[in-house]
Image 1 (spheres, rainbow, N blue to C red):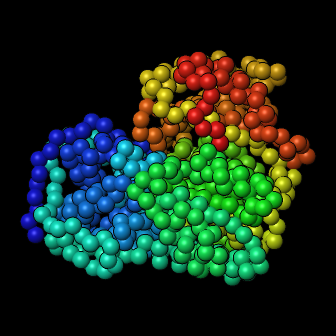
Image 2: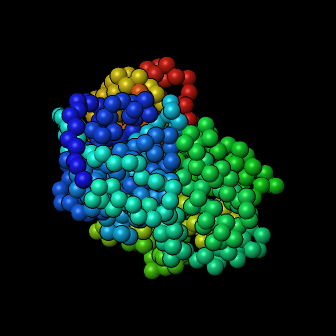
Image 3: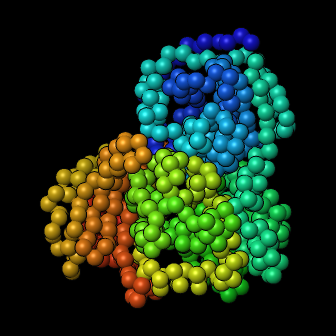
Length: 544
């Protein structure tokens, strides 16, 4: 094998966000852009000679091209073996499991998650470490630093791998094994959940619909929900992965899954509806005439996890991202277990999971997961919901209402202002930060007194690391809360996210329209931050 050292020129924009480096395909298509970034990753790692690297992605446009480049660069840098999903496919949670199951050194996950695909869409590369989780900031910071000065990358002169055929091939001295992307993950799920109970529920006439959104979870859902659990063929829709997601937007929310939501709100609709996103790590849960918010879903799954075989001994603790509602906190308090509030980004859950401090984690952005992998897992959440429904023999709405009668309800919404001019967005947040010290003690609106106003900083209880400026928080004495932060998952401009939360006690009114229940707080947020006047937007791009 002849290793080629190829001269290159660095790019200055290869700074990873909360979940890898996401850019437009047109950016990734620039000369050596992929090569530079992958080489910068390998240059930031030590001890991988002869080790195994996992590679896979969500099947989006440019996935196949980038995988071939990655394989050649891995061979040139001394990896001993690459495991790659057939067709280049591996859902993000499945990739995490493959890394852990085969004790790989790490993995490259090629995805831009819920962002659109196609030639004019988005692409992304993320490095996951040996525990199966996203690389921590000390690694991503090193990668970014290296990318700004890199002057060469290594590759080998070799033909493309046949990604369509399961089996072993070679690139130079490195073995490349193309694996079934679904098999190992399906076996893991079968060990966690009561498949017999779920099968019996389907056999008894239970109806559901699962929208794979023409993304990576299609093959997984066909195999598990239809083939293994016996749901009727056609239960899984949009189940064939498409490089452009069939020209759709693979984000499982009420905007892009409106047809499903509308169907579930009718008497004729199925009992249960669910969806997952581009790379399979997010989920949408809808029962008959009941949409379950991601924050409520996290709390409900934690409260009922013991009904599934994999969690029958109970859970050690719960972790949630700071913007996620405090609904799960009330569950943790009642169960007498640890509750952790972290910055946004699944990488912050990794240490807590590895240390056994928590079992279930979640984010308001429709990501939920547990210690079975080190990523959020959309299909896992759907299967745990099915397990709970099968054991409790109740509908989603009844289960949700009983939960609120026990714990109270956290009215909660997120307003996204997408592709805002980055300069305007950053100035808005900086100006709001400057106002924070003067807000404490003020009474806003009718009678909402500010209890605290800060910029969230996180101290990791496992390794002692700190992460500052993770989002502006304004909390009120009645438990209400406003959070404002810039998202790190977009590729153009800035996404400004406003989170609004109000707690209603167990004996309170749980049937208000969410936007109505939060109207006063929404007005206060706009008055303090000036979002509409500064951005020129009359309304959010997306409300969830």
